[in-house]
Every structure is written in C-alpha cells, then in structure tokens.
Length: 113
Length: 112
Image (cartoon, rainbow over all chains, first blue to last red; front, side, top):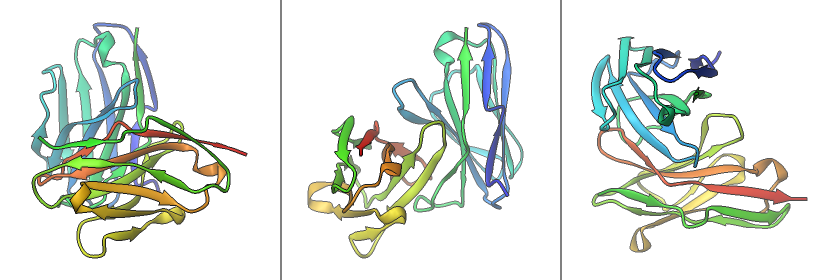
C-alpha cells in the first residue's frame, strides 16, 4: 500500500553514464514532482508535472529529462552524469493547489564516481 | 523572491524538554506554510500546515506551529520532546504553482 514509490533506492554509476529513476504514486493525484537534496540537505524543486504536462522547470540542465507516461508515473532520465549530480532525488505527488500536502517517496541516493 | 530561513542549523535538547524550531519566510502574498520531518534515510513526512484560519495549528506527533504574519514567522513547537523526534525538520512555503520552497533544515538531536 505504498503511496509514492521510487526505484532504485540506491544508484552508483560512473561519470558520463545515462541513468533513469522511476516514480509511481497510487494516491490518485494529478501533480507529481522531482526534488533534489544535496549533501547539505538542501531541498530544491526540479520539475513538476500536472496531468502529464510540464508546469515547473527550475533551470535544470538539459541533461535531466522528466517523462510522465501517465498521471501515476513520473520518471527522471539523466544523461552524461557528472560528479555534481550526486544527491538524493525525491519524487512527490499532490492534488493541484498550493495548499495541498505533497507526499514524498523514500528517495533515490545517486552516487556518481 | 520567495525564501524560507531556518536560522538554527542544529539544535540539541534533552528528552522531555520543550522545543521550538524557528522559521521565517519571505513571500508577497498570503503564504501556505508547511513543516515536514525527515528521519534518517527516509522521505519527508508532513507534520502540519497552515493556509488560513486559526493561526495556531496542531499537527501529528504532538507538534504545533503558530503563524505570525507581523513577524513573517511560522515556528514549530513541542512541549515535551521524545528521543524518537530526533530528525531533520524542514519549513516550507507553498507558492501559487504548487511549488514548495524549503528552508535549509534544522537537525534535532535528543539526549536521554
């Protein structure tokens, strides 16, 4: 009965590789998000999708490409990984509206060597 | 620009002591305000939120927070801390497009 799930939980890869992180929510929400948490625990939004449509793109490098095949899924593909991409990536979902709670997944810890 | 400030990076309290975590925000309109908690290796869990009405809001796990518009603050309180409250606490402001802007977090350590 997991609400927001992410796979994988850990991802270790070499610089220059391409990798994907998957996110699924079973809460019936129409809005999904990707956040990046750096080594100092600072959380910053990267993308937001509403009904499969991109609504927030926070000056993230083009190497990051989100894909939403349906309302329940929002995947994150990263090309040409760099050392600075090492972080914990959180997926979240909510109903539309700024006062609605965002439900977070457990996070994916990405380590780029 | 919208921003959230959590002045205390790290707080240490004894179990049973009271707790107050500070949060100040900068936002032009009426803010939606949230407190989230992150336990080690976990995702974020909502403790409480404010968007209108009573300025003192109650949350889960015995937490409460008070919205003070004149001080642009939304401080989190708990009268008696338990060892299981040790975690990272994030204050956030919700802006019009569903975006959450987070503070830098306060790490709470609880001593027995």
